[in-house]
Amino acid sequence: MPSADNTAALAGAARRRSERARRDAEKAISAAQRASSRASFAGIAKTAGVSRSWLYTQPDLVATIRQMQGRQPASERAGSQPASVASVQRRLETALARIKQLRAENSDLAGRLETAYGEIRRLRSQQPVDPALDAAGTDEGSSQTD
Image 1 (spheres, rainbow, N blue to C red):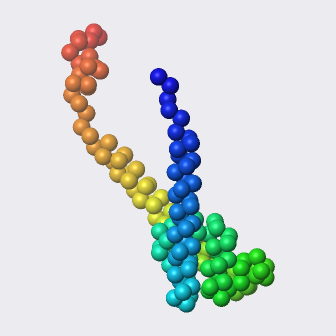
Image 2 (image 1 turned 180 degrees about the horizontal axis):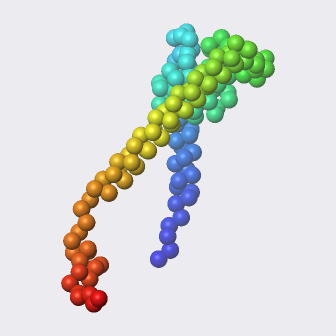
Image 3 (image 1 turned 120 degrees about the vertical axis):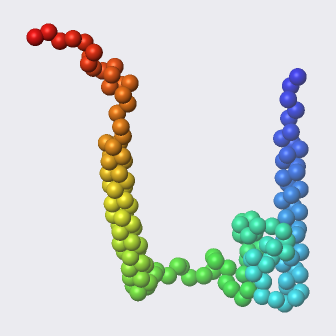
């Protein structure tokens, strides 16, 4: 019995879900505009029942929300600004402090591991020898000739 081809039904369901998400997002934006409130992406997404990541994939909706926020669309903004020297210096100092902390932790863990190996070696050397193994390995009962 051949398997049913559900691709058309799945594609239709995906299209309807996408259309519903878009319609709900547009309604949420309109409601925010009527309320004259400063809209946020999180607020619009929550009201519409969509994810913020999906909302950001809709360029026209992003532009509308940014316009409501009084911000220029990303395409009209000046290029990104390089980080200031002070900012880079702080990030470098933070990274160096983290490296120092991790090196100290590694050193401590290496010491603990050495101690654990030593303890394992000590415990193994203290284990009594099994008499059955000792008897099997030697010929104490045999007579020796001189």
